Image (cartoon, rainbow, N blue to C red; front, side):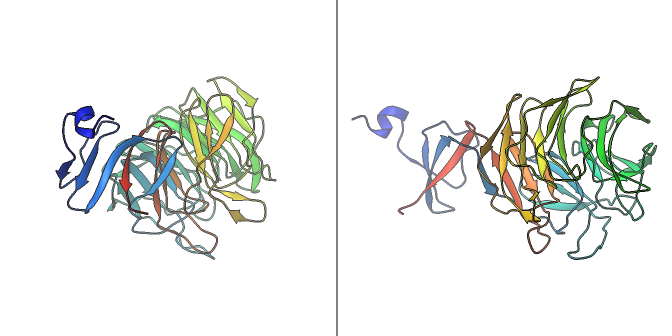
Length: 331
């Protein structure tokens, strides 16, 4: 039988920190952690703990990537309402407070990157049509939505191209199918979704998006895809839910957590391959009304509400087939 040295050309290396780009099958001893580690690939997706947010919150806007995310505004109370202007930025390991949003609100939505984002709608109360853009340093108030509403869902690439989909309209608090498109300066109403819904989730771009789950008002797993001109109903989620989070593209999406009938917070995670949803590894902290960022191979779940209280817990997702550092133990 070949030895490790014969296969890899060296003995097990002693290092003070993990290698940046280890080769699959490589083993090393981390003298700082006093453990033996190795490089592998995930056979199924896996969640791992990240740095907690400084302010635990729910019903806020979250967007970005696994290593560069934004959490903006929201509600810090349960029960009751305590709205915050607070914004935090994630660097892949910890959250840092940055400049606040201008309009105090919760149940709004946002999309974009950590340096070019946008948030819109929400409940102040009363309901809001306010829109703000983020340039990586500060927030700027821009043109309002045509229809004030909250608990819709969002998609888009950055502060110049976004969609706001469905939600509760104000006045009247009616579930709506309204969709508005943002071009960097104004909102335009476009084709409605087929099934009006609230507290759904969506990902993608202004011209290729997908919306899934939500309340109609009853909880649903209904899924629709957008091709830039029309919405088409496709295969439902396995677990219908509201207040879930997500990341990815319209052909490769990941959704996680949320609330099922009976107001049960769940950790269920599902992956979309462009045709159907498949159940995969649950998040560790079951929660609802939280933030999602990244994609189906490198995602992020942060803050939100557990069954009893808001949480600051952050979890990082590594998709199937992605590189994974494994710690070896004697148990």
